[in-house]
Length: 583
Image (cartoon, rainbow, N blue to C red; front, top):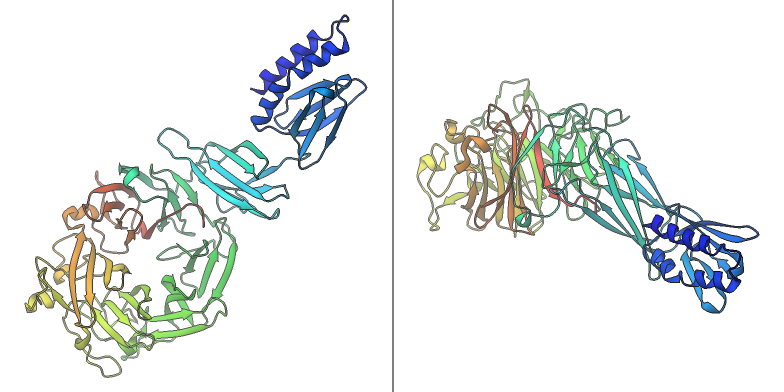
């Protein structure tokens, strides 16, 4: 386009070089070009420099086209390095070009070395305005990713995210304020996709019915370090955080995985150290905390007050038998001070001798609770913990049991001498009647309207009394004959100590969504969808095992997105849907 304008200018310059042409003729030709010059301005090019000799003013544009204007046609010109080059053409008017004596944008690929599908943009411009970054889709099946920033600090590096592996990525950058808009296009060539990215196969993608955002997979099959990545609705990897070679995190094992703080950064623990981390989108460590006297395992969760709930091993913790114990403490960490603000010792609140769900009381290290998750219930300042081997338990800030959601088989006393049977929830059928069959209560068989949670993961609450979890189904009904996992919703009536199953999905899928360990379930509020993500050992067909991510409409249970990911053993603990860009 600019070459076209340049050829027209050359044509006029040549035509005006005839010795018989008068000064008025030459300048008339230039004046007639004002509309073309205005078109150049509208196409959002800008001047980077100009030179003057005895005969002409030569203007050099950012896109490296040039225009020469005869000095006899110019009555005056002036510049402002962050505004415009103004050229007065005598009585016939003025032409004004956006003028910057420097490149307005500079881009650095993978700025810290840990995020090979990102770049950093620096705006070398002092005026306030907005920056819009568009990562252009690779093909017709892809999606453009657009992000707008308010620019008011020249020292800020703005993330460019959503690049594709092994691709010349086209990035459109637009800066604008109330008077000027400048657009540029850059190309960023990325590295090849690493071999440790698993096989990703999309089987369903109804994009209009899906929750917006990317799917963050806290990938576990890659070890030393674990490498989380995000995929888009087409299954393309669009973000990855790879700490290979990092001085602190080259052996990262985040166990359950990464999640995003309300401030937009990621956070996770590093098993089996005592360290917790907060990192930005480029992988820079923004904060680090040490839990002295404890080691991290499984899960860390942000509370509404900003503190962190953490599942931990307490150094030196012992069972009543004298053997050491594992995974039976929760701490609350004050993020500001780094001080442990509260401790929940499950040996004091639960029955450490209940062994019916695969607890080995003769082990050197007794893993009798195996806490795999902790969440806050802000409605009453309590926590809910998921003990793989004991069920779901609600505790108040004083470590007192509020209720236990698990089958009723062989519960005894805690160290305080409390009979824990008084805290067991009673199941209801669909009509609200109590289920009294001892075999159902004790988990020996299921009811048509109700099934217990077996070796569950990933609980969350909605509106106080709605509790969801991933029911793994391991050793279901103490026999393990039926192989299916479920996303399941219960209504808990704490006053009457009852529980009613009101929604579930997964039993109908059988072995293809069965995972006896790990796994996740989430609610997606924008579309009223459920994200169901069995994370290990699912049957992906043709003898392949791995994990599945299934997004379905809550009301109709219609699957709107499904992807099979083939990888060995634990593929993930957790999967999250979130915006690619933080905040």
